[in-house]
Amino acid sequence: MSASAPESEALATDVPPVSDSQTLRRGFKDLRDGFAQRELWLSLGWQDIKQRYRRSVIGPFWITIATGVQATAIGILYAALLDMPLNEFLPYVTVGLIVWNLINASIIEGSEVFIANEGLIKQLPSALSVHIYRLVWRQLLFFAHNLVIYVIMVVAFAVWRDLSWASLAAIPAVALLVLNAVWVSIVFGIFATRYRDIAPILSSMTLLLFVLTPIMWTTQSLVAQGGAVAERARIAELNPLYHYLEIVRAPMIGQPQALYHWYIVLGITVAGWALALVALRKYRARVPYWV
Amino acid sequence: MTKHVSIDTHNACVDFPIFDAKSRSLKKAFLGKAGGAIGRNDSDVVVVEALRDITLSLKEGDRIGLVGHNGAGKSTLLRLLSGIYEPSRGSAKIRGRVAPVFDLGVGMDPEISGYENIIIRGLFLGQTRKQMLAKMDEIAEFTELGEYLSMPLRTYSTGMRVRVAMGVVTSIDPEILLLDEGIGAVDAEFMKKARIRLQALVERSGILVFASHSNEFLAQLCDSAMWVDHGQIRMRGEIEDVVRAYEGDDAADHVRHVIAEMKREQDQPGTAL
Image 1 (cartoon, rainbow over the protein chains, first blue to last red):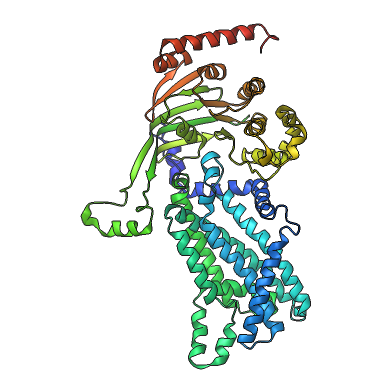
Image 2 (cartoon, each protein chain N blue to C red):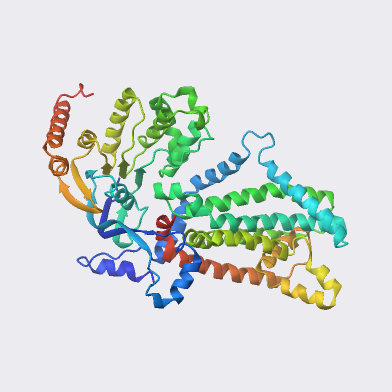
């Protein structure tokens, strides 16, 4: 697709040059150039976090505290409702919530990434991906802050006894999550800039998905009830976010891991990136016109 | 600057789609496609042609001033040349590191200190952190803000902010420098200082395109001019001729006067400014 453009340019000197705006090459170049400016987005991402907690004493650790309080509240309530042992359920909810926050923010903030950076996009000719990387990096920093609670839980509830070498699978799982956050931000970012209804649709969707994804409940508890309810556990498998959650959560709390979650996530990652590249090829140059 | 610095555009057009509230929603896109009977296609969006058929070829050493009425397309042309807007039709090829100076405020964070802002702003303009740290003393001296640079930017007055922005912009080594007017709000003495630095900056850069309503400024920084009118290039040539066509004889005479004065100053080194 992209190979034809430079060729035709080289051949014809008198023929008007063909614009390469809508080539895959330019799409890749954008991703590469943006990555090369990492000094910029690394400091901007940090700045974003420091900004939010400026002049507060605890600073960014408010992120940790907020998530901790939320996880504890949900954990205690649902452990009682679902009749689960608290020392197992609380770490489960905590890790689920931490991972969910990362997914949720990638979708919601990803869809607003270009709109929020309108000023910069219109004034400075930098790669679009700079804004994407900045966003994902910021989310990763949030995630890192939240990991503090995880560490506390591991110690407090003796989760470390369940951990093994297999728990290291969480590292590639998080890497995969980050890779997905990038394509999600590119795709939703571009389309939500053009169609301003997409961002509100996504924010209600994620609210729905939060309830439908096994974060506050477990698929095992559905299966355990048997009958028609057990059938619903199979429906939960249709939710792609469940698989994303599972590849990170299971190793982190030392639960048995199933390989098929990985296959599904890898499949979606490849498909999502293909979509992101198509979007970059076709609409990258349009974003400054749309914001 | 071993790299070949150039800007080539060929019949480049910049059309802004103006989505009204309705067509910016999905609803209309779906309905519009389905309801072919009304005779609308999916490109049925109001479009403003900001630039039409711009064919340009700028090479190293070009110093071009843009003149034209408000809304003629000067700023859009600068954005086309910087690569922010890729032409909706036609093509544009930009080789070289671009430093656009359109809005001095953009990329400045009111909550962080002047120092940090200088670094971030420099990073935005394609410099590295190391390069910016090396230039910090020089910039600090130029801005005359002293200890104030460690205060958050929100405590600065407008003029002080412009000083910081000008300090950064004039410290970099751009290959392509695009200047939009709006360098005001500084006291006269500082302006004189800024002008000298700006001239030095222009000399360092490969290509300069400068949009301004001040003919004096144009004459000082540029060696040729372009008249942008209704999104097209109406005329290109000597500053004096372009200004004569655009504004009349009085303005052109003034330009000639300014150029003559600059020549005189150059001939007597040491007394300049």
